[in-house]
Image 1 (cartoon, rainbow, N blue to C red):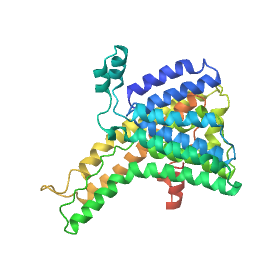
Image 2 (cartoon, rainbow, N blue to C red; image 1 turned 180 degrees about the horizontal axis):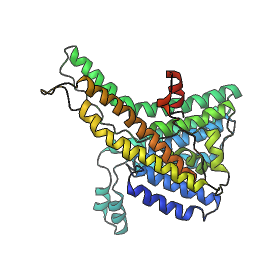
Image 3 (spheres, helix red, strand yellow; image 1 turned 90 degrees about the horizontal axis):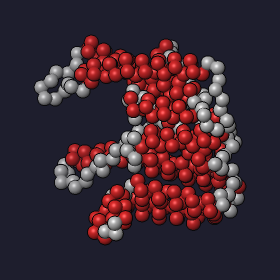
Image 4 (tube, rainbow, N blue to C red; image 1 turned 135 degrees about the horizontal axis):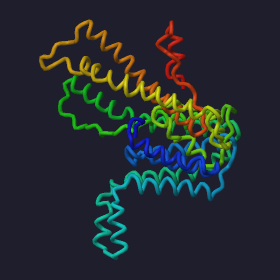
Length: 367
């Protein structure tokens, strides 16, 4: 659900209408539910991935700090992961299952359940991995301080980067391998890509979750033992899909401490939202058709390649299209966060006015 989608603003108006009427604990709960609704709007199965990162780094941050989770809390987190995998990532038809259970219809119950074992691959794999991790946790807690800290940090980084790499690059590498075999003369290759759908914002929330464990390891952040607050830190919806990526030392205290309405926040937030929508809707969305026409409708099939002036126009058009997209989303995110009492960092500082490549690097996608 993008910011230029009317449904997003209907959701936000509903959230904002009750937000400032609630106490701090309920404010955070409301934002957490809204964030999951916002992210699940694309595909509810994506919620399982963000829950994995949340649980891994919640345990990881506490483990780095030497805080041992009680057994009953570990069991609750395990049940959360396994249950969410079963609900979100299996082919169980829950409406039909409920109907069959209510009316004691055995045929309806059987018809609602998956027909093949592979339809339960994700829940079964999650259960196996979760139980294995739970089994080794007592041993990890008992490690010497230095080894324990490094081990929990390594688990966080390996697990998060493995998930990110699988969803972003698995099909790319499989396709490249098949093309290489074809180039070498091997034509009969029965290897197909998985058709993996890239979850929106997976890079942003993965690096944000990892930053928490890294900050705790470096001593820049104090770990929280409140899972709901940490989950909100990971999935805070204004910046969930396009940044800016917030360090735990910056955003987590804003989640944990009560927020107040501040003079000027409403006006500043409104200005940031208008500026961001202008960059996205007026600049980026209008440049996109021109850039696509120049670069993606040429070559092959008898079409002529772009001329020099056309290529130059497409190059500069793409530059400002990308800037309008990313910078626009960041501005809207900062504006919405202002309305909710949060401060997000500036992610773009007029990068195209830089005089050197290093200066451009420091001013582009700062987070």
